[in-house]
Length: 416
Ligand code: SF4
Image (cartoon, rainbow, N blue to C red; front, top):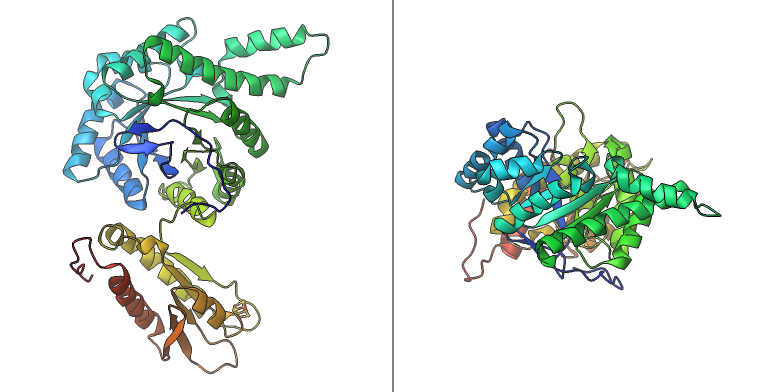
């Protein structure tokens, strides 16, 4: 599904472990674990959870020897569990050492992320080139991921000095933006000089401010054709992180900029890491770029209904859909395009329900205790009594089987 009038920025397609990023591929959702990579079981568990939630690429930190040693075992365990998501290694400071000392780690990963500002101080370029040599040796793509918080300080200092020598120096922020872009492009050029093919390079320039991120990606998008990985770095916790990421990414995606996205939410202690995947999907789905999960439309409620039942039902349906999606995705292709409406009264209820594939309009205060159900725009049945939720779920299950349950060979898919 493409946004009408949206012109996607042209980029070179890059294959990351079988997933295409850039070119005409859909915008790819990715995420990152927060486990200690050396803890193989915990890391496998979280990668599987992120993949189940719909993450199409998962990044893990490879920060020390223990983590590098663990990587091939993690991939092996994922294979045994039939978790096929490509795993990316995130390297800083010692990536050149780890990738050369642990060839099984280098082989097992599907992509290496290199931060050119964090590859060392004195031998920065040399270390960067060593990582690129490993990528060439094992035929892996790389992401050159510049981050404003760890920008190449030497390059920044040089550019600041030059700027200060100008008769009318520009604002330091302007110089920083320019340095970020230059650092990424210079590194990409260096990787190609070492011998890495252009179609093995993805670029990111992450910032923590919404306007800065938009600015830097608009500039970057206009000067190169590498696929771009979008994300607000250190987006923050809860609503702040979700809103800031949505605001920044929506502007860029609407302009056709961005080939893969990651939402860097700070989870609550013990919180669900897969939330960042769901937020990324919801941004793409809300913009009409890609559908991942049936959309549940629910009214906000107002004085016309004192009951909280429609909120509970909307939540129950949403939870049920989320729980079933890993199975439905496989068995009922296209189910992600389904649209469900759960409405609080007859004012907008029937209208919105008719517009959805399946909709229910619950009775508002002083209305008859009846809940008409609409399927494909037509009134199908009216529910009442104490089991409306269960009955509505049953109707939805049957609808999914009938509409999406035919496999390519013409056989009916099994009912769950
Ligand atoms: S559908 Fe009814 S209850 Fe829901 S917001 Fe509209 S008027 Fe209020």
